[in-house]
Length: 270
Image (cartoon, rainbow, N blue to C red; front, top):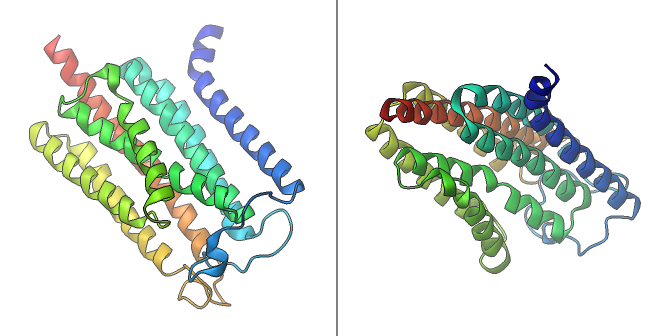
């Protein structure tokens, strides 16, 4: 009985531990005045709505709104452990990485908006590409272009690509994210033609709708004076973080449904 409880709980415990360590590090950096080179957004057209101030967070609403990612991360970890019974180790592997990715994305965004440093901006930008890497991996598995042994290789490739783009190509990650989004949509279209999964397709379309709402919110909340960053509504970018957390939850449902289809196909073949 105890081993069963542990088997179901350890992914969530690990996710919570990573989150708490990340928060502890955040407060340590805040106490040290957030050392590092100030972000270029402070002198550019864009600095994400909130006027910087001193204290524990230079942009409080933009910082603390990232807490929305943490319950999503824990839920994914718990759900992945539960689904592993039915869909095997692959579901647990993807679920654990997805849960940690959600936690890291929330933490990295906290670091950036709390510190407004260059290192915070880089960590925030790179963390956003872990989940897209997982989505690419899922569709490659679905298309049988990738084996289970290398299932998570696209995640590493996505992170390396994002890091190189941020350092050497362009400070805004929007162009690269658009390329990834197109690639993921094409992969889903091709995979669904080969092996129709209506549940996965439904979650994917819901995720696209949320992404559209989130992209519009992000665009309209880039700096003070924009429609979602006025004196009456200064939380536009913070709203984007909450939408992004909800989007990750829907994307996990998509990944879960996709892995269910892969596991079902494997049972039929066996």
